[in-house]
Length: 207
Image 1 (tube, rainbow, N blue to C red):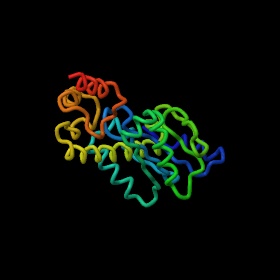
Image 2 (image 1 turned 90 degrees about the horizontal axis):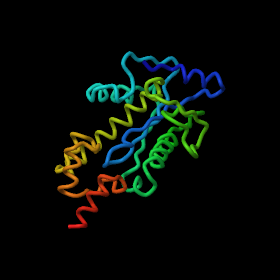
Image 3 (image 1 turned 90 degrees about the vertical axis):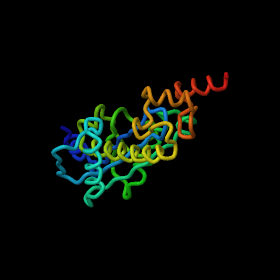
Image 4 (image 1 turned 135 degrees about the vertical axis):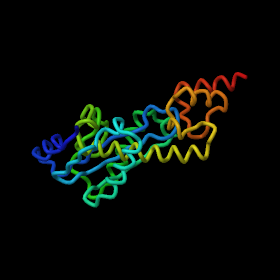
C-alpha cells in the first residue's frame, strides 16, 4: 500500500511542502487528458487509498469526495482537450496538464513528486517516481482526482454524443467504441491523431 515515505524523504532533503501529481486518460481515443496535484498533511494515513486503477468506480467516487472534502488537503486539477492533444501530442499534453494543475496550488509547493518519469520544463523542482501511484499516498490521491474528474466529464459527453457510449468505456479503444467510430465517424472530442480515429476518417473520405 502507498505511504508517505517518499514525501518524508523529500522533506528531509529540504523541501517542506511536497505535491503528488498523477494523470488519467493518456490512452483513450476520445476526451481530454486529466491531471491532479495534491498536498497531503504531515502524518496522513489511509487504509484503502491506492492507485485509482486498482479500485472500483464506486470506491474511487467515495475516496474523491473524501479527499476534496478534507480541509487539510490542498489539491488542484487540470485537463487538456483532444484538440490540443492532436496539436502537441499526448505526451506533451499530459505534461501540460500536470503543469497547469501544479501551478493552481497557492502558495506553490516546494517540490513535486510525479508518477512516472521526470517532466520536461516543469516549473519547479520535481522527482519522477515509477509506479508512484502505488507507492506514494499523495500521488495516489492525485490519481483518484484525475480519474474521477475525467470519468465524470466523459459521462457528460455521453449525454451529448450518445451514439458512442462514452459512459461505458470513457473513450478507450474498446470494440464497441471502435465500431461506433467506423459507423458514425469521429465527433468533436475524438483524438484525430490517434490511429484508429485517423483510419476511420480516411475510410470515410475514401467512400
